[in-house]
Length: 295
Image 1 (tube, rainbow, N blue to C red):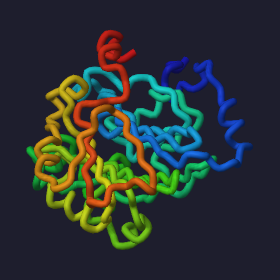
Image 2: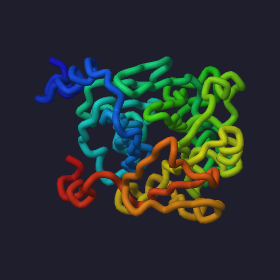
Image 3: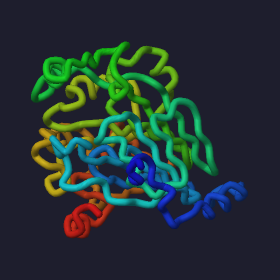
């Protein structure tokens, strides 16, 4: 007999999708066009639409082999309406930690529900390790006998750019995508209001010059860093570093005083791009998470 905890565990949940049934018949426009963005550490964000639909992007976990823990514990179990993962790396793909009505793993195409439209654009993970603190491409090739360069890379080195449209805003989650995507990918992305980009001082995903190339091409109103070290969430063995030094070098910055901020199309900053930085704030109870060892 197989392990009953192998694979998705939704069948064990006592919750149901009654709220989604109500949403699917309610076509009235939301009275307030305000979108909430909440940071959950690493690359995980929750977007809350004006009608209250919640979308969790890239929940994280530790490497299943447990040979290289990045986090003190796995992602806290969290209830949302829709869960999305950009790619099949452990620090982005913990959809099983969500009590979600809908799971979109590596979405390619379009999903629409209520006042939310989610588009996935297929591309490739960043593989240029020339700016990183260590040459991860060389390590993977030498010790794993794996060539991560496209087009014949293994599945985990694919990436799907995710665009969430709601409340009159277009929010792009970059995941760990390469900076030099083909022109047709950039054309498909189009105009972006808020870009969620991986940034840390170790330049783990991409170099700072790559990040700047993306910003220059997207021209977003807001850039939100993610994928960086948080001292009481991310372990030092991850080799990630804080994003604060990079943030401090930017011209227009806003440091958030909590893990949630709100946006509307009418109130986007005039000074672009403005860097909105969550720092060490996360939208879950860290003390409880440590006390219950992530349970």
